[in-house]
Image (tube, rainbow, N blue to C red; front, side, top):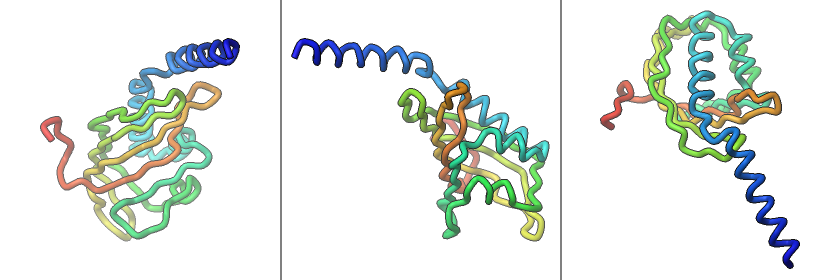
Length: 153
């Protein structure tokens, strides 16, 4: 019994130490979100692909479209971004190598054949820290917002 209790305590300390390496993923995730925004502005889908987990899924809460896989997202043709601003990032869950963030963006963008797309988005992103230490987005639940993000909400 004493060995079991000692093992549990050791495991708790090991988990705490491991979590300490990623206890504050906010800066890293903000950096990745801004890199995504910049890649969209640059039209650099390779850079976007590097930010995505191999099992990435995009779920649009405003549409009945099925979830987009990484490959589907990267193959969307005719997208043009003229402005893309990450307006807020709030880490809602931090489980060590997994973090959930509420993220808002304001964009000026369009799609060929569709025209201007909605400018404000409120998203729930799940990020996973890989063995290489890089945070990659596993899933994004995207919802159109009625207005730009404000701290006063």
